[in-house]
Image 1 (spheres, rainbow, N blue to C red):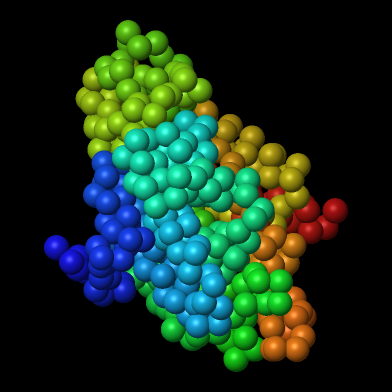
Image 2 (cartoon, rainbow, N blue to C red):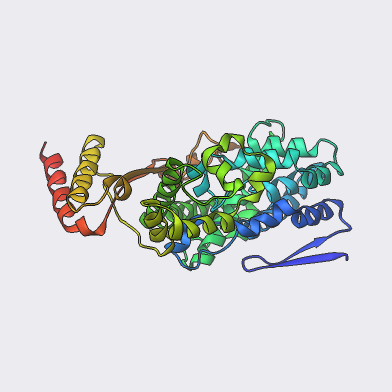
Length: 421
């Protein structure tokens, strides 16, 4: 075998040549069991309950990130051929950046209190199928990759910028991929134009040629829209809240009161004591199988929570960010009282979730324009990007649909009271 091709719905044919050492490494990493596990991790977690096409996996996304990173790297090599020594570091970092995701991707971080970056670094350092393959090319490569992903390395700034920054290969892929799978047009960025505008600043880090400014502006606006309309969609917030409640209620029980296997038992009651094997043993299949068993066998209220999730009996949510913080809490109390008056347990059907999204952060891996003579922050060249610095916030009040009419009246009164006080 000389060439292996992955046919991707977004990027079409992604070819790997095993005669190229770095690409042979990528093939072996893809074939490893920790990477194959990513087939069983949904890219967008429970968003499929909101957008029925959101079924893509972290496996597809990770290969896509590698593909874009390779394109970007080949563009930069034309500017500085000495960068070739970093090829293996970039390929491995781009491919493995998400290998430490738990079940349902980011959702599991709130459910179980784990950070995927830390687990990605641990897998890269400690799993023999990963570390051995990396170290075959460079006996310190697994350490370099894990440090870069965990944010501990300050040496390889250009590679870090390509893997994790405000214009990185990860974001470029997930915006296009998520938009494609969901069926929206928000994520249609001009990837070719962005890649052609990548250049090197005098300090060796990533910069943007002025000709690509509008393409980058469009990309940042697209990202803003994707977060506001897709990632932070009210029903996504409700689904995530419901999953967190399921684990919370399972945790309130003892292992003797619900069916649970040894792996998920550790995740639920002892997440701080999960070893590498137990981490990799959990995926969407195992977690959702448990939720299915609990729907049939667990005591209340866990049984009903699981049934509501699996059968998409979702609560309602409304944005009350326009209300002051103390009035938001008052709104939650009102919702809880209305629910209780209907005989419902308010702790299981009423909640408040806050989100803040910043479209562009100038002091966190800020983008720079380099025209060959002057290097400047991108926001100084674009009033549009400058406006994206202001954060957008949401405060979702979650409640049962039975109280919607009464709650809407009371929220109207709260808004009127805030307006005139």
